Length: 150
Image 1: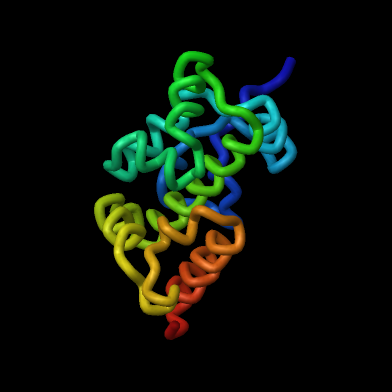
Image 2: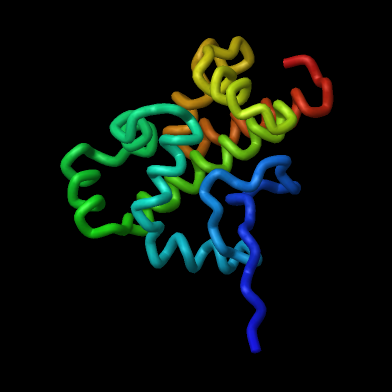
């Protein structure tokens, strides 16, 4: 008999204060990989939009999903692996920001949308459009959590 898997924080290197914005059922990174390969369900982008209080179109733009593709994915009910990976990346940053602000989602939203001097004046959401940018946001969050000036 297999045990049901628990939601895992989307790639967070440590436990998150929140429940995980995407609430994916994955017991470990390999399970998360399998979910990404299978394609996330449409509800994933809706969860991100609610968590960030942003329109679906803006979430899609941040995840580099074209408007016509977004319409097709809504009809199909599932994203492809590349799109899913970008949604997971965005979800991971939301989870980490919520953790940084000790569970305060509104504060995390404000921080993600505000220009950050340590990010060259760009917003964390802007940088989340690429993996390299997202890694820089993660590094900044790590420095802030440990009280290291940026």
